[in-house]
Length: 240
Image (cartoon, rainbow, N blue to C red):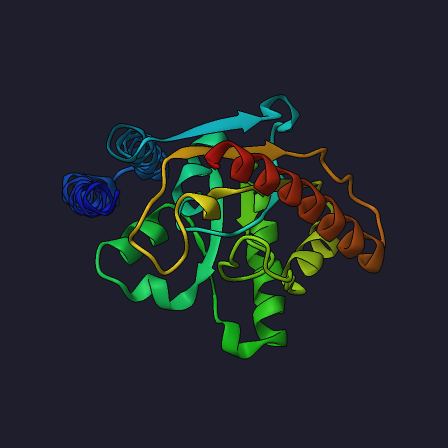
């Protein structure tokens, strides 16, 4: 499997480079053009995962995705969900580290696609700026995608949810869509070795606006972690 993993990684980044070069004209086109390119790249990457490494995907609960403005709070175990979730939404805006915007090509396209950079070193100021930007993007009927833990966590690791998602929920007044997954079983963080199997993504019931901050925080973490534990058990059983 190591050889297949190496082949996939080479093809994955080659595909990324080719599509970034081909997408140069989108920098002077309407934003929808680069959003379409990113969705196409995500789908081709999923095809490569299946064809080279035998990693499939099962999406559950797609009918629960509401139309329009939305906060999406997803579990984060792998590089996988940073692109694979993109095609699920009409006009997603991912929250990402500000430093990523400085990378040539990647940063240019992230800016053009209307991604939301956050300077995590500013803490309270960063939260205030995030709220302003989020409200502007939600007013454009977009879906804001956030990984509440801020960074990838190994499957089964103690959860470490940050306050940013609570701030977004409280300040914007829109529903939050929780997502559980088990991608870390098949594409572990900090590893090039991929394992065959089926990544399961489960879209949970939306959390309506209006809960107080503490109630929302507890409900979000409980629902995502409970579902994720179940998906990890299912994925481990099939793998074994």
